[in-house]
Length: 151
Image 1 (cartoon, rainbow, N blue to C red):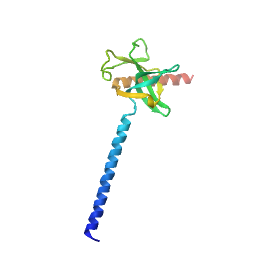
Image 2: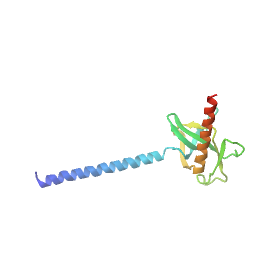
Image 3: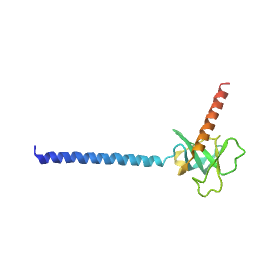
């Protein structure tokens, strides 16, 4: 075998390995970017959220809880004062809405399923205190439901 032939084959394998590495990195970055555009747990998004009762919907901020086959489960955020309600949590708003002049309330008692196409813009992430309070409220509600079902 001629030395030039061996060198050409070695170069071909080297170029193939470099091309494969570039494709792997490009695929990883593309997938990461694609995921970044999808709602995930703890994110705050503006979405077209359907009304709980009746027809229609409203563009509003919401906290993403989890993804399911039939859609994405969210909790609605409202700017109206709900301090008298035990099922609402005061949450800081300024870190995801610079124009807000007061904090908002998260409706803990009414999770809603929203279709992925309804999500318009990610505006931030819930702070650690909010995520802990949501988890605490949801687990307490699950315990109450389980106790009620055992009666």
